[in-house]
Length: 248
Image (tube, rainbow, N blue to C red; front, side, top):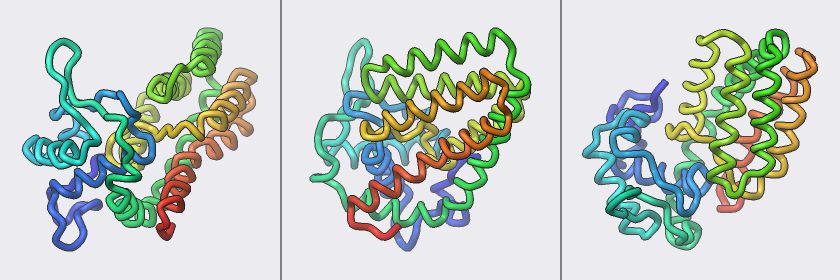
């Protein structure tokens, strides 16, 4: 489930006369604003971003240049090089881009967020019913690692690991694939959960609740916990839009 931006008929087609390049640039600024990418974090490669957003590498390259010109990202050469998010304040540099994108995307995505919560609840239920002793050990270790996350980039990676283990416990690859597709679709096409620092404590509490229900085999409770937890992405985006003075 990709989010085509080059096609005028795609579900996330640019509005009005905005170009695909500008639309991608706005999405990237917004991804930084909502915490999909954190200061100091390396962005996916041009090839990876082109595949995620279903646009050409030329479009990605031009969009990266626009965002780099704003000072929000920078290219680094040599070993470990790539394109990295800077510590510059997106709120001072490009708040209008984030507000514009969130105002456009959130109404369109509400039903999709609802669908995602229902699917993730089903996944958690199946995990609680089917988990093995090895699954329990892996989930408890992943939760312990999440508690020790040193920054939001690491927290996001550990979050992905934990939820991947929940999917694994279902013993159904179709559910894992659907979860991954929905994650891409509801995160502006980038496939990474927004992790602004202010939601970490809530995410940790919800992870503890979810893992606890799965470990104890409490299928109904796991379903409810997962649905509540996966609404956090939408809520965090709505909070950011409200901070920007936009209409949610």
